[in-house]
Image (cartoon, rainbow over all chains, first blue to last red; front, side, top):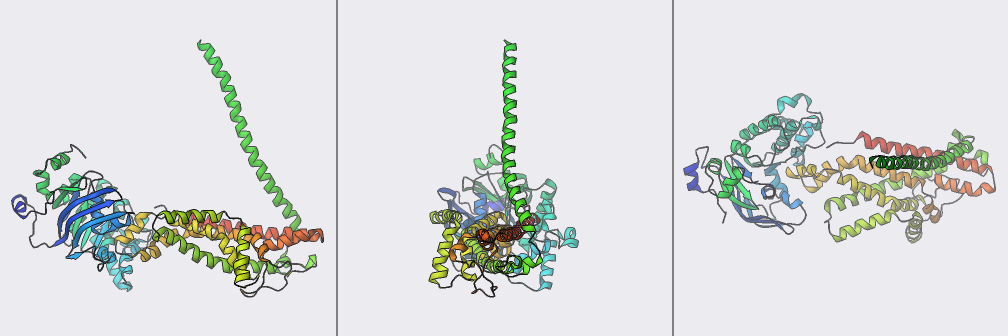
Length: 273
Length: 294
């Protein structure tokens, strides 16, 4: 079927960009199906995702790309009447296993949402929230985490003098970087981003994109995006979703310059979607 | 032909404008009637009550001598009643709302419960009085004391507090709880740290409005059998007590025997009204002060 796992041979041929064969697999998805009530949103997906690279998921609205992303940290289960079949392995652990709690999973897999959603608290409290719920109480440690996270998210210089100010006073782009910093504060291994720039202006979008580029040194990043230029600019690998199925998944260069499926080609060239 | 049409339109126009003015007058006059009745009531109460309203009226105990009578007992009784109602309704009401909004599965049982909470809010207060009489006063043998009265009043306003708290919780955007879950917070941590703080101002506003209803409510306490003339103050939850609206009720009842009692009732009404206005004003203040635009 459309179960193209990163085809090693294909990679050798097409990839001229970064490929580091020592990169470990973060996620292995096997025969994944997801239903919302009667709606079959994800159909028999097989996919692998690696650390230290950016994987972009593209596809038209309602194709299941956000659903897939939310399945990776089990946020999809917050929706009423979802049913999941198949398996997702995260770092050799089955994420649906009872012994592996969602809290543990979501600590290791951070998430950034479509619309910036800082808490109605101060900038400092927004970042410190994660470490605090995981039991860190020491003020000095928290201060350090807040500073480190904000620096990593390129926000420190803009907010260092007003950490006690309310987060809602920040601009949209700053709020989104705050949300990224908040997610970095719990020291994740992988970050899921659900159209993180769709609510932002071009300037803020560029900042987030360069931030993503620097973050991939240390994190696996999976980004759902509507914006194909964005996928082409920032991702190492691209997955094309259509009607809940994976049509094509390969190195970004290959997907954009030499798509193997007619539907991918049509979508990329704007024939539909 | 065209002239005919214009004549027709002009004729219609006059009617329409006339009707418009008429509608305006109707609506204004209904409002004026309502306000006038209210104003009449308040003015009458103030004229009648102001002559006896002074500090000693607030600090004196009850007496059969009209000129020595005061309402300290009723004020303390109302405060004691609140001491039972506030914690009971806040703890049970907010917890129920949290369960219904955050934990309960949205199925048929849920909508059945939801519908019945709505129904309970519409049950006449005297029915709650009978329930309180049966359960707290008779079955649990508490007697007509602060605890029994407070629990009865709590039953009365619980549905209101539950619904208000549910609405407050619903008004917290789902994106906030998603953000919290997204960094590995448990459900309880999310509720405690994000949902409750964000909905607290609205919960408190609803609670204050519900409390002001409990303060003014009389019927359930009549059924429970709050004494007509009570000189000692309540000193504990298990003491007998009276409250402001009960005092108004008995003084009004006895005004046919002693004419001055009517003035005392009026003065007590002033005290009750002023406290209710203060409570409602603080609810409005809270709502505006902590309003967050997400």
